Length: 323
Image 1 (cartoon, helix red, strand yellow):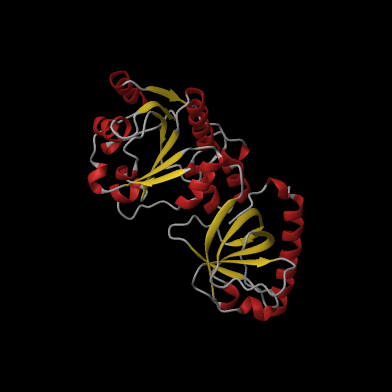
Image 2 (cartoon, rainbow, N blue to C red):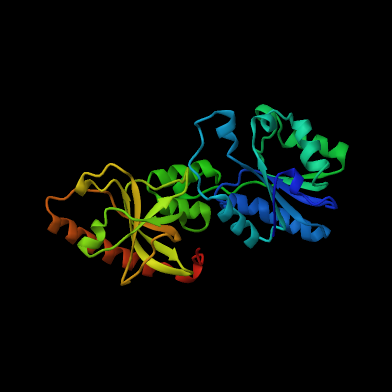
């Protein structure tokens, strides 16, 4: 998959293409439906498929300080899009100047002059241009002028987790924030993932006999609610069952919120300085402060046992290979 940053990176000889535009944070099942439709349409017509997205998130430019928690960093989104068969990913730097482009200017500058769109594939609620004034109806009108079609793909509707809402990044972020990682899994089509570099913490886990990887998460990461979770720790090309702690470590009056993963049944792991990923499969319990260290150790032992059982109950073959 080709990756471009900015319109100037698009090859001068780029021909017609099938395009879809959006933030696509998380590349959830609704996104997958739209992107897959674009890929299939491109293959039918014998032209490449292009996903257009933005960095930073548009809300941060339009309303500074409102950057939403991110379900996936750009490199992870690119991996997921490549798995869907996308031919090229265009990341447009979202600046104040860019935000002022009218919908008509956006169409000409991006879709017509640079990507030579043959068709544009979007969800029904797609908005674009200055003050989000453009919609799919306007896009279809522009298509008549500039010789491209517009395909509108309905989003899935969630099951019990979302109460019948269409799949969306907003809903997924809410479920993650509530600690409902299984509900988020339903929407994403895979476990919610947090990434970062392993840094040295207080090393209390090591002292207690449960050494953890303290993950310094990437900026704006969507982190689940405080508690203990079962999941996977991905490091050095390997996926390891893990018990994951999210919180401030109330047992020792901590103040900094951390994500720490204990690789179950693994001895002698040295992950300091490595970029790792943590997948959240299931909620185990809320964060608590115990009356004694013995009580804490008993709870951790139970957390590890429950996490081991929960991970084993999932089909490991259906999980992403990680990294």
